[in-house]
Length: 203
Image (tube, rainbow, N blue to C red; front, side, top):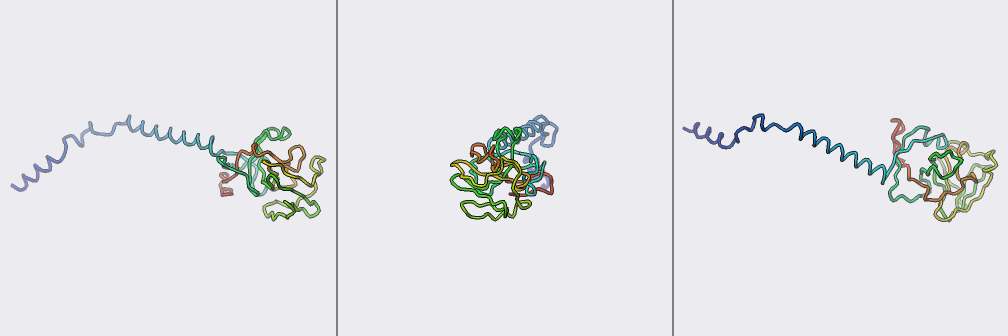
């Protein structure tokens, strides 16, 4: 009698057809959910890399050994304001002689500051104070090009003075054809090295 009562309870508590084929998950619905998830990921990536950040590849050796030619970087744009020491990417239209390439440099000074270079000692001075620059590849020497003979600059407001870490192989703000760069030409700050694997790291 007890067994019969328990059997009736089990039967009453289990909906008919629970394990039947009509209750199996719809394959079409599963594909739609997967497709929707992929589209949301794509949309998020588009928004990220168009509004907030972008991927940029290093072109040339002017930032050796900090950044290598061909290295892939994540550049942050949203709300960025340049600070001394930041590595930044400048718009390719900054100067015609750069062959319309985006360039990667380090911010040395900002608007309102002065920059002086002593090529005899290879030193850079900002507002009369020498910079401690452990990141440069080697000692800086006086360039041969006549457009890079200047040694004193007064940086205009809303501009930055930029240089490469590989000073002897860098065309930067020392060149009178470029000079201090308006902040509007800055695409963003390099925040992360992404490729190759042995160069992955935060800046």
